[in-house]
Amino acid sequence: MVEQQQYLFETLWNGAIPSEIRIREIEEGIILGATQVIQVPSRILELFINLVRQAKEEVLLVLPTINAFYREERLGIIRLLKEAALDRDIDVRILTPTNDDIEQKISNIVALEQGKLAIQPIERITGVTITTVTIVVIDRKESLAIEKIDDSKDNFLEATGSATYSNSEPTVLSYLSIFESLWQQTELYMNVKETNRQLEHANEQILATERAKEEFISMISHELKTPLAPLKGYAQMLQRPKIMRAELNELQKKAVEAMSRNIDKLQALVDDVMDVYKLDIGKLKFSMTDTDITKMVNESIAELKPLTINKKVDITTYIKNNGTVYCDPNRIEQVISNLVRNSIDFVPDNGSGKITVRVQRDNKGSNDDMTLFSIEDNGIGINPNKAERLFQKFYQIDTGFTRRHAGTGLGLVICKGIIDAHGGKIWLDKSYRGGAAIKFTLPQKGKQVEMEETRE
Image 1 (cartoon, one colour):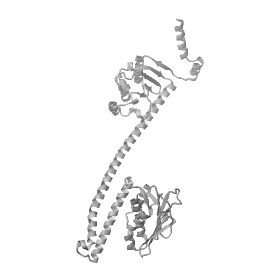
Image 2 (cartoon, rainbow, N blue to C red):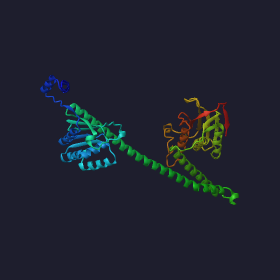
Image 3 (cartoon, one colour):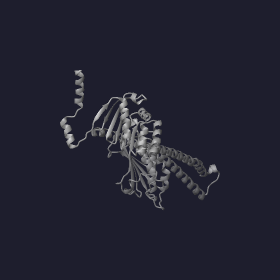
Image 4 (cartoon, one colour):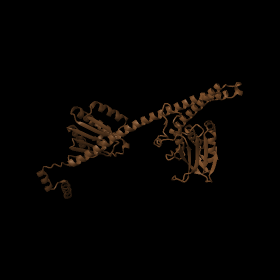
């Protein structure tokens, strides 16, 4: 009996408030409220329902699990909250995990309550940690935290352990802060989720556009190349009297030559468009190998000999670094050919045109393992202010209606794409005088030898 009374006294003592503190609270009009732990599930259920019914302004509810939603729905809590929002004009906000069934129920509920009842889904992947505690805050003055001991139970009484009720302002505010934090995180997550959905949709559209673009480019290339092959073949046949068994007069020869030149231009245009497209999507193929520099340069220039002869252009090569470079020789020959063709277009056509192709170690670069190529000419030159735009698609230095030099504006873009893919750089030498000089670098392998001078 004494021990019983001692326990009762200790319990009351521990829960009591010192008299001086209570006297001060009364004198200053401070109302801190009280917090109590309820162990009986039936009392917890009764309190839960009464709090919802007595709400006057706002109800905030956090449900930790899907089963908790179903239990509260079977108890009639969700119905009471709907009535509070619709009949008593109370703001109701609910946070709950969802599945397809709950989302459908939420959709139906929110549609009927005209904005007074808001329900946010709690997603597991948000990183928000939800315990097994159901939290309800009433009018920002009272709170009830209900602990679940067995979430698998369908019955509220069997699933519930203890609960903590409080009308103490600090305690209620702490639960309110938890709710608002979760609400903001779920709103943020929903915004991110919607943004990701939009991004995925946009990405699907981009991929579809890219596929359509790829198919279109492929189709156009095929449709253009298909008639070009027989056209070129017939043009060559017309230029051979033995095959045609007839000699063309001068007018006919000029017409066939013009036709042949334009077929070549169209073929080059189709190839350029395809190369630029493949560079854009990263599908231009390269066959890298150690390549002899002198052989590659000389073969590139040899293919252009008919053009240099027609325009009486003198091409000189100075190869100081007679070793190798690690590259795709066909693609680098394409670069050299494009750059030399550009020079041929812009040098004087009175027989005084000069083009120089130089190859040497890149002594000024930060990497000694690079080889420097330079294509220089004595043409009209390039304004240094246009250097930045020189390697942009379809850019033309001469844009007038009467411009003499035709072109697609893709050649230098292709050159830049090829050189970049090799790990080198390409640029306009702004310090060069008396014409234009475009330089590019490639990774080198091999030894340097004495300067070799050849003249074409």
